[in-house]
Image (cartoon, rainbow, N blue to C red; front, side, top):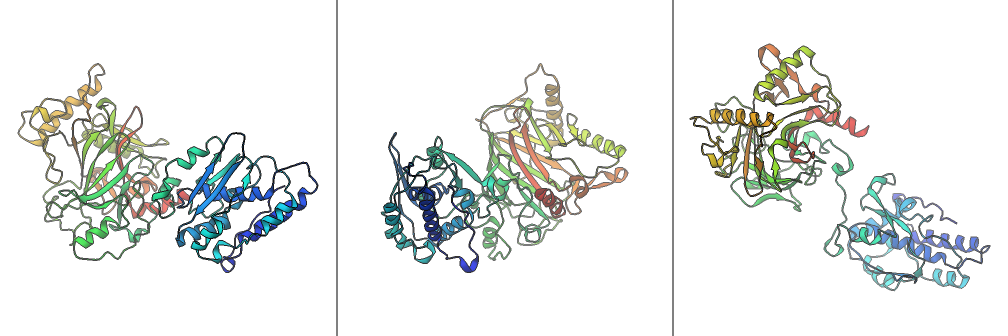
Length: 541
């Protein structure tokens, strides 16, 4: 015997009693089981177990439920209290209304069914079975505090994430069996310190495009964030010279709201889809920031912990006034892009295995003609001789050794990130343990790049190792990408390439990884509004 399917209530019937469904189900159970007197368990137990399965397995729901199990004996479920929280009551109604087809499923949940004595049914149905929607939650405490009945041994059920109101979101449910029940109930939740149900971020459900409307991006037409699924998690956003966060994990506000308050203004943009710590919107500096107010991002990955500072020319959003190219960091410089990463590895990492660059998830869009593509790669190889590029494959990539790609690498020493970075002139602060006698930072960087590439290509030589006891600073510069037009410019001979056509809805990456394990030291994405439409098309498909 199976329970009849329970249809979702419409808005004008939102308060229709769930317990009417219970009553009809139990009456049907009594009628059907009359022909099977040899079976001994009761159907009221089945419904009570259904309530337990829904109440107990909803992850992070702020209610207290106890489960006492003794081998060979019946199990007992006791629903103690439900807090006076409208969110909780509404969540219960939504779960009852839309999830019974797999959250309250009968078949396969409680093993063999058995009959229920008529007297037991009448006694059970004589209780006042009022819908939770019809009275305040404080009344539920008195009506359900003694609601306890024996039941058959639990076999299996479903864990439903609150907030998943669509019955088709099966990927957000987790199977619960008798063997893993205790682990599931204890895993990653502490009921006592939760006040609201948890809703999974879209990035954890395979969605890659930013969900905030591009018109509402705080630094439109650009958006900067961690790469979803890369293992990178943001700890906080702050001014470079401050330890106090403008935003940190757990805050209900955003860093751009805090920044506007710092300016004495109010941010009036949309902040509803700014992301979780694994995909949240991050600041892009423009070089005009006052001293000490460059914005940096503290992050942690599976193998590295550090701070990221990004500057892009001609951007707005991190200064109270519009960008002025006649002053600030980019004044008099040819570069359009600066990234500074400072931090330490979580364990020792041989630099022989470390690379920087990008790796895409799917093929490129419209590639330039082969003769032009070959010329472009020659230009890029001039700046990174050990780079390996695979542009026309199923997962295009462009990777170069981390020891020679950055314009500057410093070990310990000066930890300033905001000022102009220079290749160290002392041996103890160099990655190779030896310093060049050249008088300029560029010449010293060339010395380091050349010598590291020799070690990199000679497999018999040991390359340096990143050690957790040291702090490393990396600076990356480039002048090819024009963020204003969203193109790559290769000069008057090769011309420019439209990134929208080339990337086909995939963002530019700032990434470093261990090639042997595929673990990423850091991984961040730069989005442009031109990419969103194509990206969402792939998300839907």
